[in-house]
Length: 229
Image 1 (cartoon, one colour):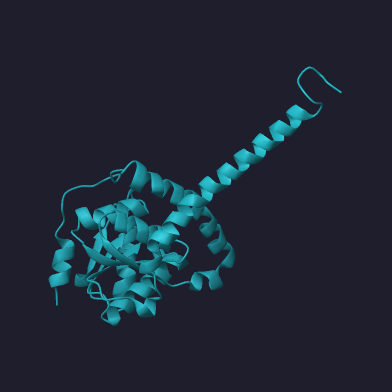
Image 2 (cartoon, helix red, strand yellow; image 1 turned 30 degrees about the horizontal axis):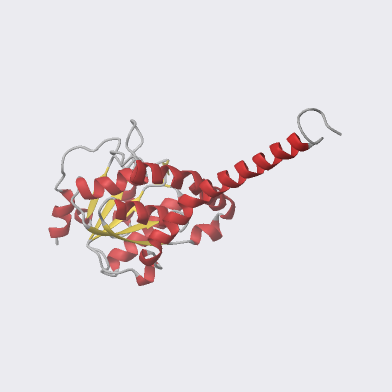
């Protein structure tokens, strides 16, 4: 039966087809940045025990509370301390958020590592690591790093390594995935957030080539730490 607009039910089928096509497109766009980061970083990600020797480990912040690192951040710091103890790195660059009074990720990270036996003169704090892209850009342009090992969780590692390499660093990445066993639900939530975070990372690093929120002048701290000892 005709209704003046074509076969009965035709417009509904067309609307359903368009809705399906939109859903497919959205799904592809959501997955594409994750695929990009995974493939771009794959040759440079490895277990902590197989980390290459690099001058610096870049440890990315993951929250502090009550003067202590969160559990996930503590795991990252444990990996960094082990890299230093095994002679895989000579200095640690701790990049975190100190954007408001009373909240100082890099100093909490430093204190944790000193308690683990890492010499204070081998530790450098980046107070403006407000996100992963900012941390990578500042590592090169502010602190003068050229070759380093990124330390974070496994779900974050593809994005972190890819962004550091796009920032001009010869970057490798290692992770301790104990968080997946210790806090499976929390880890799953963070892993799911990577879909959105990696999309933003693609815009920042590839499309917009965004400047860090705060760049600032060149700092000699990392060069001094590498000369120490």
